[in-house]
Length: 106
Image (cartoon, rainbow, N blue to C red; front, side, top):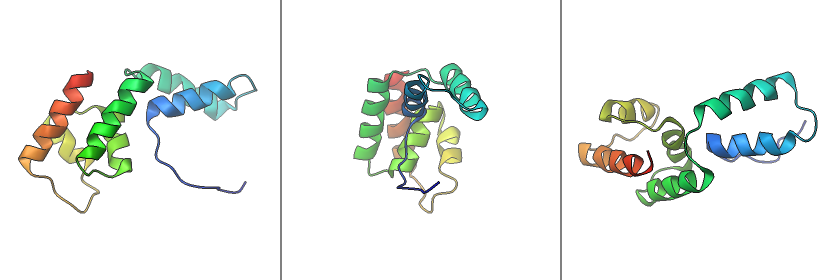
């Protein structure tokens, strides 16, 4: 198998992609992933897309925006945990902005 490219997707987009493939036969791992994604995703595709766009307006990387959209943090500590692997640190006011954006979609 050859990797054609790399793109960050949200859980909702992954669920939709696997669900489209459902018309053909899914592998065991894909069935497990689809079951997990159906149980864990709460937002619609349009809400998730809007959320990611608003987070990207804050100059966040696509990968970080997708993680925040998947996890939907509720506290500043949750935001900090999501960003632990990033080389940048956010100010408290930036964490507040992220939480305000996320709360709009919950």
